[in-house]
Image (cartoon, rainbow, N blue to C red; front, side, top):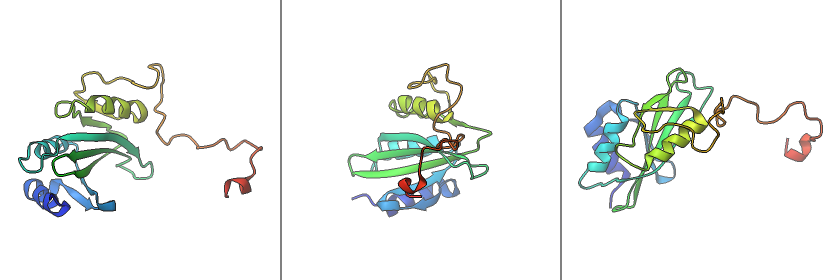
Length: 166
């Protein structure tokens, strides 16, 4: 059985300080890397003879507007069917430089997920074969999942705060 400890030690041995921030929330091995190292890291996991982490389960973005210099995070979830092992990899990006290499060369499923992440967060995947909106209209000039707008209309007077647990 493949363990978080075994994979973490193997990644540290191979990549050294290029992998960092190891955690295990709810037993899921989670780590961070840089945009320069994300593809070599995923390729290593995929091509590893024993681990066989060959399936990209999910790829998405998250925004932390108060985290200056690392406002956006691209999150990858990978899976080894052979060992029923999952791993989460995060890459932090600055709002001023929202570029990361595409993973479509490693995982065909990354195509749609990267388009969706671009569509909602505006994160650019360099080298993507068709990076354009996939769920929203092309004419949209903003990215709806960004935390740039208030969650509710402050001018509304028909809401009683007590009814909303405030």
